[in-house]
Image 1: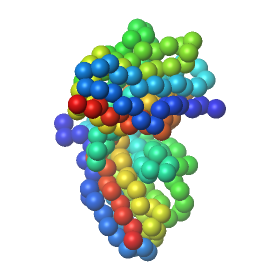
Image 2: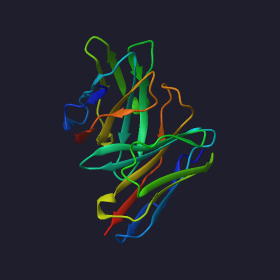
Image 3: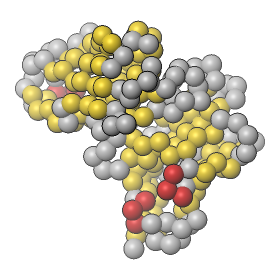
Length: 115
Length: 113
């Protein structure tokens, strides 16, 4: 299996622009997670999907952030409009099931820089 | 409140020596415990987990971790460190009733030749 695939790997954009990050989870996994990692705040869970349905989006910073999962093999995280404080590494992770004992598998991340 | 603590920001070990990266947790109910490693410019990679059973768990790359319920700890260990083990290590815990992983702040492990 190719693992979790994320694109793009790097994104540089200007403040105010729309940014869309993409994720393809591991085939057969039915839980998908979006995380953000910064030096200041560490690893933060933004949103969690189970069977393509958003379960908890309480970690989404504000209305500028939105996430979708139209099918089991694709998810997007959109920031509109982007701000410099959104600069971070964004990770997508998937797991086989919702159960507590299942580990998450992470993608390589998207490094976002907003100038 | 549920929490995970990694008390050391950085651990320095000479190559060939044993290493320990510490993790303590606080969670209601039985904990499910995980260790992940992050190499530079890479995503987090699963190392090992404790669900139930034997308190000593073996994982990838020769790492192991010992679950200690009385001390609420889950320290990561390796008998002989390699330079290639240098990375950022994260401990995480999940309550059996909660899907969400609670992450430690991470410990930077530096193995010197």
